[in-house]
Image 1 (cartoon, rainbow, N blue to C red):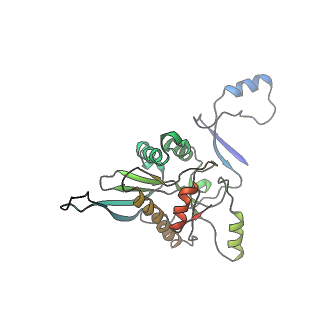
Image 2 (cartoon, rainbow, N blue to C red):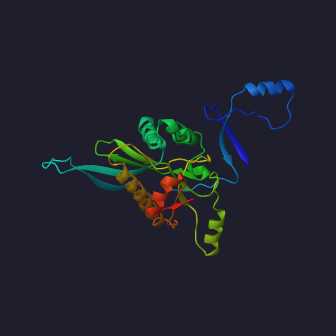
Image 3 (cartoon, rainbow, N blue to C red):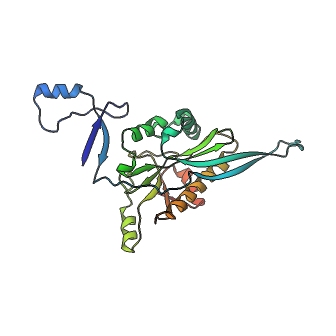
Length: 254
């Protein structure tokens, strides 16, 4: 296992710079010297290149039934576009965290789903293509560019950092001459916490947005499988009540 180090982080602790047994003076110096873990690798890094594709997945039109007695305006239409971003930095922290807060509620806010935590993984070099984690986050926004839903999604070339290992699945694929990797995975990297994974603003359209985002993950899997032999599977790790809806719409959960 190799360890890379960088400047201090609010998320990760400090560690001494030497692995041997330093003198008392060196030990005290190391304790006050700031470091943070930049990346952990259990085997040689495997870079995975996402296939070239249009980052706009699809446009949708949502309708809301008009209020009772409103015969002049029986329905309101809302245009929704779904796209993929290659870094969470392309989304404002306010927009991402608003989806996160509405999805979990203020009393159960999950810091590991926050923009700050996920962006720190990208900026520190933990979730980048060189380590086999390519961000492919999905966002849904309306015609006013208001973000109504987000999905933390990664294209992976291995099964490390997941805490639910699927090596037996990979072995089964290879034994039949098929490829298991790369795979798309909706998860929080390196963190064995449960919770929502499809993050929605609390709007009257949220149920429709949920279905749209699940469909978008299926569309992205199909696009990537058609651009280089990817397996047609997206894995979602998350909260049980949400996973039931994901299974009903045709995705795998673990």
